[in-house]
Length: 253
Image 1 (cartoon, one colour):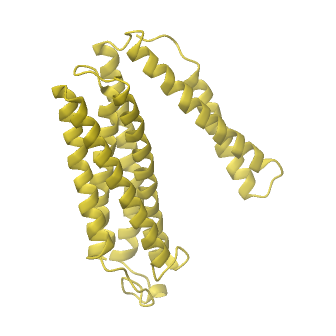
Image 2 (cartoon, one colour; image 1 turned 30 degrees about the horizontal axis):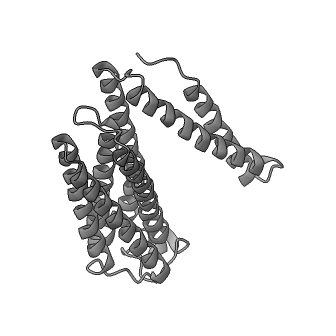
Image 3 (tube, one colour; image 1 turned 60 degrees about the vertical axis):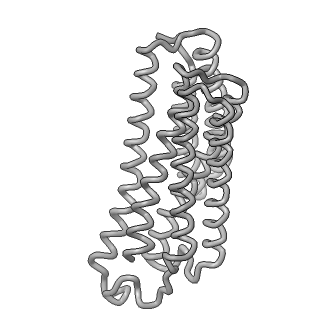
């Protein structure tokens, strides 16, 4: 096993500070904003040093044996399962409101006063972009396994470019949308679900960019490239969530 680490405990206390600080800030207590900001900064610090230690353990110390790698893979899988539960809550809220619309919104869905977005314009283009990025990240994975570093770098660059274009189009869609997050349950469910998905795309893009840097620095081998595999798992999860999101919130709604 790897050496004992202080970062899990510090990360837990940082998350507690962030949660308590946010609640205190929302209720108008003095010092709540400071506590939330301190907790957030500590979480960012722990993320950096913890992942730095993991890279050192794998790259220089040789501590990532098959048993350790299996534990890390299980951790990533459980994390993605927790993310599935997170998005399930938003989809549940959407379908609860859309399948049984209340008289307050005209007993119809979408609500009578909402002008919806055309799913065959930007949403369809974003679907093509995200699915294409899933193909390019798979291309990068196979290139790493085959020992083709140049192809892997090229595929990762394509993936990151597609992700940036996707995020840019999503921002443009938000700016030009004919409704806002305050327009009842439709606006809140639309912006919360698509917004959190966009946030996950942003995190995934950063994840892939770090993998690109590590790939250029020869951190990955044909046998050991778990850091990239984690990014690929996460990116495919983002792809699948978008497919459900496009079919339900954009197309069906």
